[in-house]
Amino acid sequence: MKDLTYELNDYMNYLSLERQLSNNTIDGYRRDLYDFYKFTNKSYNNITKEDVIKYIEYLNKKVGAKTINRHIVSIKNFFKYLEKNNYINNNITTDITGLKTPKKMPRVLSVEDIDKLLDIPLDDAYSYRNKAMLELMYSSGLRVSELLNLVINNIDFDMNLVRVFGKGAKERIVPMDDIATKYLYEYINLYRNTLLRNKVSDLVFLNSRGNKLSRQGFFKILKEIAKEKGINKELSPHTLRHSFATHLLNNGADLRSIQTMLGHENIETTQIYTHVSNNYVKRNYDESHPRSKRN
Image (cartoon, rainbow, N blue to C red; front, top):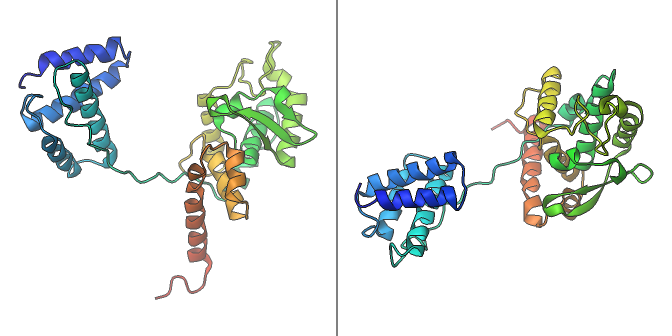
């Protein structure tokens, strides 16, 4: 590879020592850059903007937009480094932009699947904890981190409200329904001490050792309950939050209210649920209308 080894190694050292990126991330940069230079077969001083565009067009025939954008980031960051360290006088990648990728639609459960998921037999502290967690998530649309960081003093049982701290430690107060309030109250007052195991903690949801329940622990619980209920759909810890927003929209809630409850800074973030809702309505129409499948 022409006139590349020294500068590339220098860049890799910079990523490791100054940026402190992981070995996997650095290896990814290295692979992307080697692939690019193998395609151009030129030294970095001779590479043009047109060479980069040709490489993007070449990749477009082989891989998806997400992978192409990763290559573009790798190339742009390397050339930015070369310019900053006076290896080159002009960064030819400045005007190169990534490809637009379609927004991934959030996974949403039907109301029927939600009812099945929340129908948890209650016979011990763990089942009451799980019931309270899932009811609260679906009732209030909390992020998993907000749920697991919830403390007892931030619950108002009289007003059916919870105070949570979202991204950037932004505080918001969210309503919860009567069912979530009921099971949250029963779990905290009758069963939480069993999990606490004589430890001191103000966290609401605890694991079997009396410590904070982890995201991985929550996800494992969610998957196990879904499997028991015969819900064979791909789930994530965010599924109940997505379902909360979509079902509210389907039942007439306005987008601004949903934005406030979810803690979205921009209404554009919340608008994705309008697409999910429209798809849901269309699917129900196709399944239910007597003439929808006729030519």
